[in-house]
Figure (tube, helix red, strand yellow):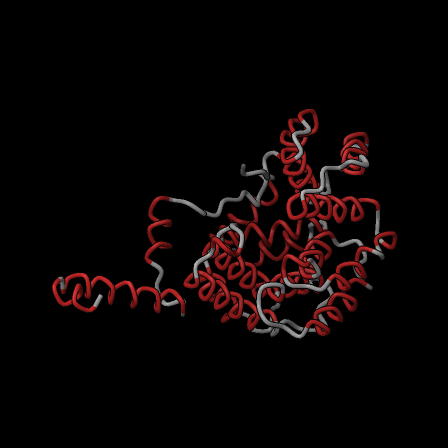
Length: 314
């Protein structure tokens, strides 16, 4: 082998080059494959958080025009689910420089901190992409977690006495903690302290469901403890939890609904339309559509695909 390399020195430098690229990728400095993937557009993050809702699009316009008092008044007038999607929309469509300007102007105001946290979380997921962990390069993982740590720093400055946005801040933090090293008992307590005042906050439950899921590193005991409490929550929250549970069961364990539980849930949701004021219905419809597609339930697949519009980016 050494004789071969001596005879063909170009081979040696090629091997050295690959070795350097391997080390750079391993420690999250640079991933040539990942950069090639970015060039061809794979893993591009897409969403439409404003749902084409006039009230949500209006708050984005206020924000981008730096009409901060209008942003605040608009968000205060929203329902809990509208507020969740407003923050997600500002995370997607708002400029962090504008948020920094607002924070500098009003350092004691918690609202721009929530918006900044959402913006950093959105940026983190843009970097990571939506693929499974085995498809995410070390470079992306390092950058993803760095963005989440920045979001945590902003959100932990949030006032503990602020009851208006308490559940939104907690949901954001739980979303962060599912993906970075965290004291799990602290996160469980954060959920318990928040859910007492907002027992049926869909954003909070959605975030916590992910945190306690084994796919994000939780134990089976954590998962079961949460699922065993399902009857404590409203019917919609129960449907939201079950839809994600069944999706995970099918996706990760190839559960084929031999006992008809998934079909029953889909029929139940279809039979009782959810109030239009509850924007988290789109999240429920999206997950049911994915599950129906995986199980080739043609009738439900088409129905939930249509119901998930305009939120669904498929």
